[in-house]
Length: 416
Image 1 (tube, rainbow, N blue to C red):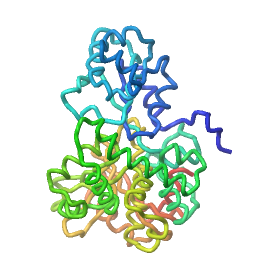
Image 2 (cartoon, rainbow, N blue to C red):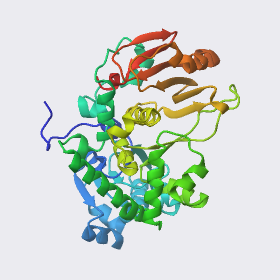
Image 3 (tube, helix red, strand yellow):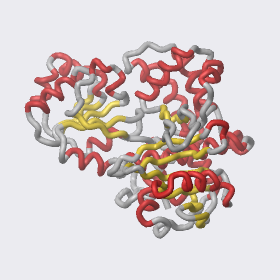
């Protein structure tokens, strides 16, 4: 049974935040608007100052150092970007007093957007918060290791057959990972209204909070173009044409959307051992429901277009992996791999550190075989002992060995 709406639901990053608060004077939690940053941070705060409230912001603008001195500890400074000079005051306070757990800063804009405001290097540690994973929504159990951590420690011993199927995966992807939609029962019309309002605010108010001026209609077209090419590697010229903008504008929009936590550019993995690897990123809007709303895509569209369906399942799985990796102690990095000409292509490559890699192929089907694992087999043979394992994530139920250190695993194993 789901907990009541007012009950706090633990998030994967809670443990990361708690640990950081025991060691550092200031912690910044960044992520998309409405992803749950303030709720998670408020549970450990004694005082919450919201800088999107005009009267509170005025006090901080007048004398941020004095405002911090008067506040209780731990102090949550919410929507810090409305008074960016507070970052300098936090730096000065931590320089004077290194006591851990004094300040938490939350906001929907990365501090590095305007480098002139960023004074936190070495004083403020940053935690990324992403949309909800299905593990958080479905089970509420965030105490144990996630799928990648289990696979790299005990391989298939802690992985069980799943359930759900392709219809279930698509429904979850179209519902997305924002708490307002994932934790509450909403009708299709209510979800559509919330998502369209989110996009309206994104292209108008949210972008303005980064300190940059953008044309809302052009930015809306660009977000729609990104959604149409979700989890893909479109040529830059394709995006320019679809959004009717130029190269400079595209680069600016990318910076703004990354800063707002809505765009994730998954960079290619690179090594001198493998020749002719492509260098372009895979582009993901970080929530599949937002992507569907931006592209005006629904269930019927996905099931009538196998390529579109495959990319949406890719993006949905990447949401699960991205949230999981952010909570792992070793902070693994997420990449993709593609050899020029498409001779070999792996959807996701997890850099575990220590020169070890884990490969992930994603299939919108329920019965993967050896042919679906051929690129993982190639990577294993190329890397040798550096290859920590590889899986073909699929929408079926079965778990099966496909070779040494390679297996087929259901997507639902990430939350079952």
